[in-house]
Length: 286
Image (cartoon, rainbow, N blue to C red; front, top):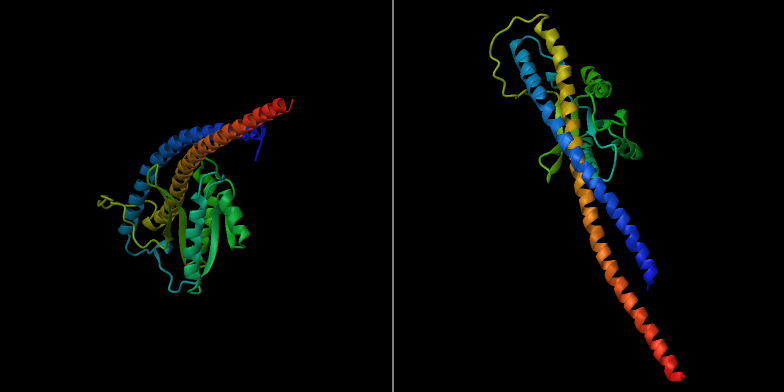
């Protein structure tokens, strides 16, 4: 059995950890609000560019963009996996990687090869540890990413699809639903089977440059926007998950301290009782 001094030391150590987890919980709550604002701010642009792309693509029935074409035979698929740079956010990354691997294994059983494009340090370390075919990665995306930081890796995957080196492209990220629910989600980016944006643009326009040239640029911007939206969505999920994880850690530390305090009282009481018995026994002997 531990001595009272050892138990006091344990209680003191856990109280220090409790202060740290409590502070991290407050920091994550503050960052979560900023991440939600950032996510909501970027949403109108994502909706509008989808409407514009849908309208331009529908205005020229003669030009079939490569991103809208389904390849005859599916030989290779690409995955863009969006993870966090830091840990201490519960099972957020693990659940995401599990979904990605399950989906990849399912299509690999059909003889389809898989390539990975990774965003975030956790994805980089995980998929390299299992010897996956990684063709592009960004090991650090930060808390305020910019589209310019992502376009290089995205371009590698888009160029591969355009050259028919990839036949499908998926993005895997955590979807922010509310502060209690964050779900891993996998979405097919390419080929774009249908652009359903709720567009009300029915007016006919004369395009300058040609609608085909304009669509080439807009398609790339649309895909980049989709990936960027997934990244900011994942950041909001990260802060919520970390806030909840630190709250659970703080609550658990309270229970541990209460248990140790009860043990300390019992050990201290037993020690005092033993000392009194020794004094009484010595007095009787004298």
